[in-house]
Structures are given as structure tokens and as C-alpha cells.
Length: 496
Image (cartoon, rainbow, N blue to C red; front, top):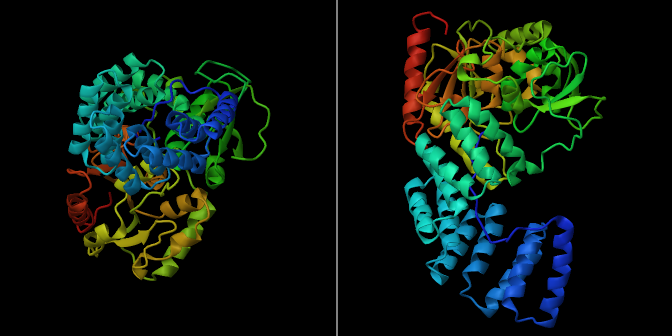
């Protein structure tokens, strides 16, 4: 989990469960059929259709209601949220502008506009809209949460924490604010409370659909000799690669460990000590007594910054595969004995979740931004960018990564490198967890796991060095610093 989540809002007045929504839709459809000019009925019908996933029908209701009253801010807000959720941020912006023009004192329109500006990295403008929303409605938890996200992005962690606390004081069951509070506490190194708050992630609509419906208890760190515990991956590959370090510690407490991860991680995870069985996500699970999401393991072990299990390597490639990749690297460039440096310049795009997709773009830099680095000829650069779509990838970076099938393959390739230079992606966790040196190209509003104000990491104390943006979105200084570090490291004949 990487991102603090903001929220656009439309009033739902305590949305009921799915069956109650279905019955309410039928009732309101009858009202609209009898009274086609009933704007309130159309609005509420649209809200329920939207909540039920029937977005096209909701849009039709909102548009028909706007034809009756073009100055209803509620309708413009609701349409804007639908466009936002569909990834059409420009159209969403237009709708929120119409909402503000219809009612300049509508706090929801100010909150929604602020959220879009935050997504577009216009942070100061976003703060102004959240402040305006709170001036109009001081007890507005969504605006407090959204304002906290911006403060967090700006590195103002104490202020963000205070804002999230105000939001959850107003609404104690506000899962997104609890989750964001947890990530900000973790970014500030306040792990004890941070892990507890992060457990709210499963109540957040952004993740609630991924919650597993297991009926057995969640393992909380207790001794349970002989019992079978399912440790299941969640969210990104990087999260599993970072937190699988706990799995041998679970086995040390006497439990029999079954691990469930996405297929690309299966072969690599089989090499972890203490694992009895690895199951690909989607396959039938064996019987188990307890379960634990991968990112809940630090809570189970009461992890603080000082007690992170940081010994490396904890991940390992298969030796015969390492040797096979060594031969391939030699054949690809006969006689080239320069140090080998792997490059990763982009994370995986997540187009299905607009806010997350925008945050992913902030952590990615694109190959063009790395061009000054490629002029350093004391090393041999090798692309680790799987599925690169950029047509101008230099041939000298090699096409070796194209034949990689899973993370076990990637591990065998990485084991032959002297250094990996990567943006915040799974490959950085893989290499650092294998004991390979990693230089992390980190965005200004970095993920909570990298803490703030430091260029190392307690998660990878001997293997990872951070190069951070000094300004949001500006990779220029980062690349120049890395180029200087490369020259200093390799022209002197040293290895990192």
C-alpha cells in the first residue's frame, strides 16, 4: 500500500446495504415514472444507481434533472464524481466548476474541486479549496481528510496527523482517514500506533473489495505450535517482497506456514525458509486454522523502527538460474567486463483507479529523464523495465528483460548485477532483499515506508540508498546526483 487516499463526496445519508438499495431504486423509479419533473427523486435515484454500480443509468437521471434545473449544485457534483471515477478528470473538473458557479457556498463542491487539484499536484490551490470548504462547514470530515493528504504530500506530517485526528473525531468509523492517519504515522516513524491504524484499510472502499472472507481468526502474533496459518499477499508485488521477511519468523513460533501470492511470485516465495506450501492466488487453498494479510505481519510482531527484521539477504535466486543468466549476459556483450547496473524507470500503471494511477505517475520518471545518466560509460546499463512501451529504448540497454517470466527469473538476473537504480517499484524491494545494492530514485511525496528526512532505509540498512526529489515532480537534480555518484563509485574501481 503506497498512497494516502482523498475523497470526492456526494451526500448519501448513511447508504444502506445492497438489498435495501435495490428496493429503494425500484421505489424511486416508480416515483420518477409518475412524476417525471421530480428533481429530488431523480437525484436520489441517481445516487442509489451510482452506489449500485449502474453509472450510465445514474448519469441519465442526473442529466434529465439538470435539464429541469441547470443550477442544481448537487447534480453537477454527482456527475463530476462519476467522471472522476471513470478517469475523465477534465470532465470532472468542468462539472465541479459548474457546481461552484451554481452555488459558490457549497462545501461539497469546494472539497471535490480541491481533491481534483490535489490529484493534479496543484497543492497550494487544493489547500485553498479545502480551507474554504471547512470555513463553510467546520465539521466536514472529508475536507479534513483531503487536506491531510495534501499536508502529507508536502511533508508536513505533524499537521497532517492532526487533521486526520480531527476527521476521525468527527466520524469515528471514517476508514479512509484512519488508514491515512496510519500511513502518516508510519512515515513519521511512529510505528506502534501506525500499524494499528493501518488495519482500517480493509474498511476503506478503495480496498474493501479485496478483503478476504475468511471465517477463521486473524493471526496476531501468538504462539500456536502445529497450527496452519495462511499468509496471503495483498495489493502490490513490492508489498509482498518487503514483508515476506516475516514469514520465517512466523515459522519460528511453531506455526506451519502456507503462503498465497500472485503467480509471478510463487517460485521465488518457495525459496523462503519456513514455508510449507506456496499457492498461486486463484488456486484452491489447503485447510488452514489462521490467516494473516502480508502487511499485517509488522503489527503481529509489534514492529518498531528499531526492531525491523532487517537482515539481508532474505530473498534468494536459484543458483543454476543465476549461472544461466550470467552466461546470457556475457553472450549479450562479449568482452564487456564493466560493472553491470540495472535500470527501472517506471512503476506499473493502475488505470482502473484514477487517484492511484496519478500517484503511480508521480513515482515514475520515464526513460527520457534518465538520458543524462546513460552518458556515464564506466558501467554497463541493463534494462529491468518489464513491458517497456517506449519506442526509443536504446539497443545497448539490451532486451534481456523481455524473456523474464516471473520474479524468480528477475532475481536470477539481478543476482548478476552490481547495482540496481530504480524508482519506487517491486524490483527495488527484490534487489535490496537479495542483498544487491539499490539506489532508489524517490519522489518528493514519498511512500510512508521510506520515512522522511533520510537517505537510507531501516528496512534495507546495508543495501539501499535514497536519492530524493527536492521539488514535486522534478527529477533533474535526482538524476544529476545519481550520475555524480556513479562516477565517484565506479571510475575509482570500487563496487557499491
